[in-house]
Image 1 (cartoon, one colour):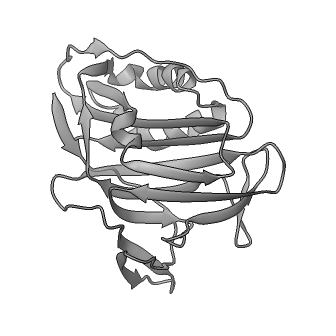
Image 2 (cartoon, rainbow, N blue to C red):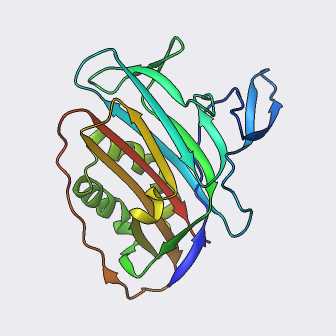
Length: 232
């Protein structure tokens, strides 16, 4: 079963428009400029999917490491936190514990949301009872390479939306996602862990071939990203 979906990504915002990109912004009640939509030139406008909260963690091997994170997505940004220059991305300093320093502020992770022009598939995955979803996520996020803190952040965001369903049908995307959300990291990480969970709630149990999960080894400078897309 193949479908089209749109991912969302989020971050607190001020907007700088890169070459070849257009954006619409508004001023909120606090006086901050907020990105409404930022267009990167790849969006075709049809059958996009909403990807929520891709969170990007950085773990360099030395404190104060200078790191540049550039994103190139096939779609639209709807949120950025912190807001970056759409042409050159985030230029940050990061510590070994994952603390990110950017323009005088500290962040646990970089955050974006957006609408993507991409495909997803539920040919393989898992059908999990709602009451067992937390245990399933803890076990399988660990297998996918997330540490305890990253797993807790993931569960805090997604479990409230899933736990009351009779069943949750879940599939973890790989190339379907990364082919449409390209990252350029300098210096280059030794380990890249990128997890996108595509899921939907179901009243009845769904038969689905179980998805195989490979556990990566976290070595050297490590980048971790997680996000999700609820299919409706």
